[in-house]
Length: 132
Image (tube, rainbow, N blue to C red; front, side):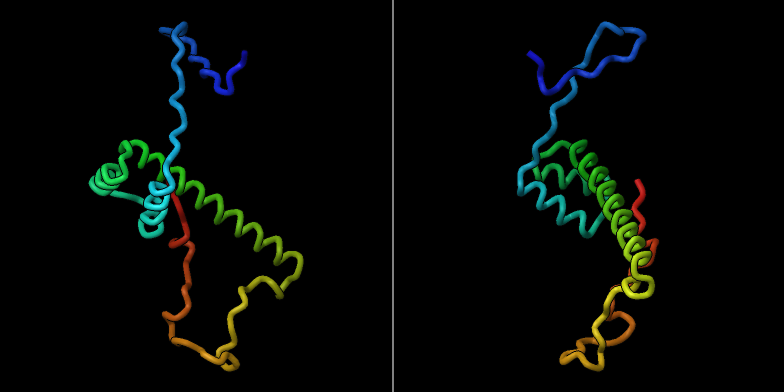
């Protein structure tokens, strides 16, 4: 019978006959994921003391929190790159029409809301940049 998970081959060298089993995937609870996501929205990187506190509060190992944040930053980076590629392809299809996000016209809007330089969120490439 073949299992869904096979132990990875050990690299040749000392102890080549020894096979280590890979640790099973951690299934986070919905509450743990919610708290991790909530924290990630505000902080992409955690200081060691913050990481330790979060891990203790959620009942996770420190390494699990480190790995979750690394994976989440990688996912964010992939998502941003995919969105940029989508926008670039849309601009190629309809030059000048879809290249800029549609913003409400302040003159015709019934409730223009706050106005001024800080009223619209403008993110620079540095703010969007995610590095691991």
